[in-house]
Image 1: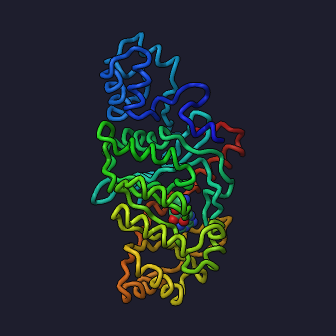
Image 2: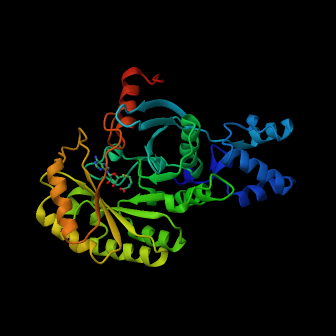
Image 3: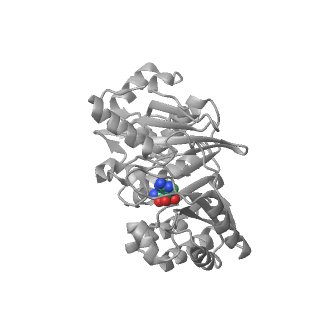
Amino acid sequence: MEKETESTVLGKMDIKSLTLQELTQELGARGEKSYRARQMYEWMHVRLARSFDEMTVLSKDFREECKKRYLYIVLRAVRIQESKIDGTKKFLFELADGSVVESVWMKYKHGNSVCISSQVGCRMGCRFCASTLDGLERNLTASEMLDQVYAITLLTGERVSNVVVMGTGEPLDNYENLVRFLKMLTDENGLHISQRNITVSTCGLVPQMRRLAEEKLQITLALSLHAPTDEKRRRLMPIANRYSIKELMEACQYYFGLTGRRITLEYSLAAGVNDTEEDAMQLTRLAKPLHCHINLIPVNPVKECHFQRTEALGIRAFQNILEKNEINGTIRREMGKDIDGACGQLRRRHMSALQDIGGNETC
Ligand code: SAH
């Protein structure tokens, strides 16, 4: 699996995962001037070319040479679902090795937001999550993460202003590729998305949270907390056996201390599991010393997982307790409720359909 995370895939260098500096070195080693690298970088990361052939500013011979030498990652949309309620679109993309990942495009007043996947599958095992049911297949490369944003920009014809890494996968379990992706996505020579408009969500890998703090990026870190005590959290998330809530809170403080960025705590409410008054009070006590914002969301029922959502009134009551204690809590608007809502469900449906019909499903 480690091999897949490197910039060389299938024996060819994955050119779209190279930073401008690396590309300059790579082409320089072949005798090309640095402006060539700039041109190519712009075609890949600003003009969003789908192949070397589109880069007509480069000579034909040079393009042919590049085709032989490099892998040019582009994701192919095999299925697109659109919500009739709010226009949210869910994309299922096929990767070069035939794996599929899903991404979501959401339209808000303040701009368009894309939720991307960071791995094919996931090995974190959260009990309520569809993405983890089949385990981890592999990490995504930086180019595969970037191209989810690029392909969606091209398919919708609209600029993406916000990116959330909250699709399938645990981003901090794919640390190197994630940070490379973040740096390239926000690079002024690329799409130049503002770091402040990017959120990375983690189930709570403490050492990587600390390491990310030290990168001193201006991105928002979201922690999927989902329970206010270790005992309860362990029942929902196996990772809670590895790191305690105390360690998580310390890592959040560390992140805020180094970046000045307020933490987001994600809290999915499941009826009778983590939605009592006592849970709200305990959550309040955890949140108080942190500079944080809490996102409340009803758990999205997944067939295999047996959790029921907390009803709207219950969520409101939970939020009221937070508010009374001066904790910022937002009930997150659910987007695309009518299109395989929960993360990982579209991909799972697609995979089982493939098994049913012998691997020929396309759109
Ligand atoms: N691995 C990362 C990011 C991917 S999941 C993480 O754990 O944060 C994105 C968010 O959706 C997380 O907060 C996750 O806990 C939550 N989530 C996953 N399945 C869910 C479901 N069925 N209902 C509600 N939230 C869910």
